[in-house]
Image 1 (spheres, helix red, strand yellow):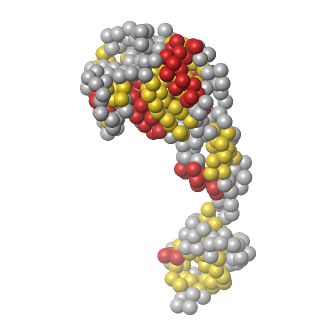
Image 2 (tube, helix red, strand yellow; image 1 turned 90 degrees about the vertical axis):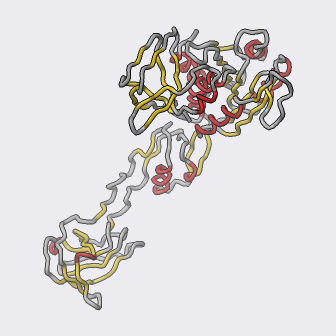
Image 3 (cartoon, helix red, strand yellow; image 1 turned 180 degrees about the vertical axis):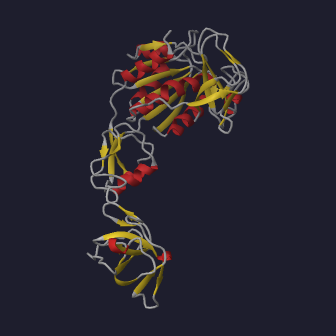
Length: 400
């Protein structure tokens, strides 16, 4: 069996390079640029006023009770080329270019203006530099805005737009297909045809998980029965229309577990099969002759969810251009005693309380227990034979 870190490293190393996609800046949130992005102009691009008020000459700063003539007005917009001189002030508005020789802006609340607006009396003195935004104080020309492979946010859209970017080159979001294997499965919305059949829960769950990651598009889900020819045709059809293929079920060693031999017959041998974790041991990964990654997930829903979170989602992020595709983990402490008596690392699902910073295991920890999975919001890894006391530190992986 392969350990977790080796499995993920092998997956990431085998993936093809991200494809390029031109993305409008307004849509760049949750995308990954394929090159470093730098500022082409300073931000602010010119000295400007923080407040509505009056621009003062240096000689009139730190003085109160004096009266100054208002010699002009500079609104926000084009620079009118005004200049302030001793004994004079220029009416100015928030964001307006600073007149030449301005040393400070005094708020309009700190002056008394004459009825005709032609003069002001300073009631509270202004300090040099007060209420002035200097050129480049926020961002200098040439400064790094975002690194290659960095996760972009909606705030990045704002700063990129401030630099004149209409679009940027990001990794293309991979198209994902999902196949759920098992003759016992029926799609939700249809009547169950016979005793012993059940609804396909893995397909909608995995599609929702991939969609929640915001890294993939065109998520297609279909069923395939326990028939080698049918399974082979279904796999082949999805390989031609997707960038990644997820197959849930049929990964073990029973007579009806046909995924591994079917993939081998299609020229997709397993790079590795079985990972040393619980739940999720019968996990498979391979690469098709055309370079499409194929992930074989266990059929039990909790096992499918855990292995998709640990291995599939990081792979999709890397395909989309992420430099650091593993999801960040948060620090927590155990709310109660936790124990793993087994010889494999055990991923427990449970509830992380952000108010107390504690994690509590939730419900039945069996690999089929879908309801207890739905009551959880986080996963925690326990080493083999680990015994965790209340208050001990934990690393929490948030669930999407």
